[in-house]
Length: 541
Image 1 (cartoon, rainbow, N blue to C red):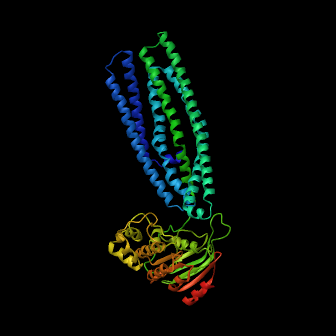
Image 2 (tube, rainbow, N blue to C red):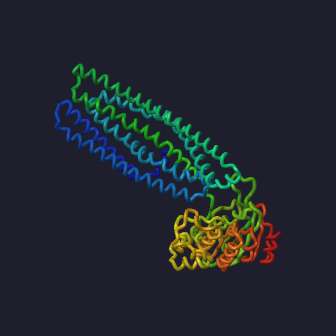
Image 3 (cartoon, helix red, strand yellow):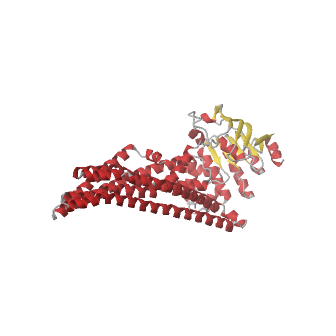
């Protein structure tokens, strides 16, 4: 996993960090030389140069951090963009991965990667200088240095296991907490809020205990590495001290060996610490790569651009099965929607109506069968061009904390004020005149400040502004009062005129604006009812 993360770092960044690490190694040797010269010769002359060497090392370390931080930001941006383009199984878990999870990758790139490069470069530079001063001491260091990564790897494998468990528990906690918050109103209505509080508390406790276990092993690794390094330095320091006492080694040479020997081990010791700090980010990256490596949940990766007019849409034996579901959401559904025809889909909850719309939008790929748009398989169409031609009005349109005009403008980000006003009139958004600043009134997150009917009309205005020749409406009149429903139906009639449309409807009012009704039950098409009168009769049945 670390190799794959390292593969995301551009080669030029690795080379630049390596050059900076080599510069720090050279300045480290210069610093030791100047310090020994000042101490052994009782001369204060080298001290200003010593301060300059220390300052130079600090500057190089700062530049290395900047370079690594920029690489981390680019990698996180790329991973987040890739994850946002993949279908989310559990929304709460995906939110945790996109926020806290990928933020945990920072220590890997800003700490572990620079330290890994330094651990490969600095010991070689220092060891070369040691060999020039005293080859016997350099030989002892060269033999004992490999013990540090060996012991570090042994402890690191255990740390990776514990950190993976810790991240898994955080993943569950974040996902469950988000889902509880989203359904808090329902939980309170049924008196289950207290039970879910206990569940969240239990998950938080498990995560806390897993974190403590991971920290315990991290502290143990520091003890092991410190002990190995101390023994290795002692194997050099004791013979050097004896040789100094016997007059077999010059004072300056002995001091230089004693100063440089710990510096060979220091980058390796720091590497172990950086590894533990980045372990949670590596676990999160493993989860992100698992999502990215999974088969895509939708098709539509071809390059054929759809035509301009209202298309004919044909479903041929379309079957969709969701993972873990007992039956098929759609079971061999065949349906033809002619150019400019408006078809309503009715049926009980769970019959597969919303899945049918998702298939038509190209958001869900059939397990078998195909969808033809003017005779072209939907999988062969350019997915971006197709979705740009589809207007979507969901049951619960999401509105952002922005002005009414900006929320409408999502249908066409480049639309001017005149087109936004036209879309608002087409969607019967007469309530805009009652808002403090009209179309420029800023809404709260989720459309706070508007009623359900007003939010639905805003969604229709958004779809109208998109100007697409295909309209998909998913129960837009659900949960509306009679007045709001009547106004919305009038707006929908104008929206669907001249367009190929598929409308999911539970209530009869919306059926008056369609040409034909089909019924889904248990994922299967039960048969059409012709005309508007037949539509109402079919719905009543």
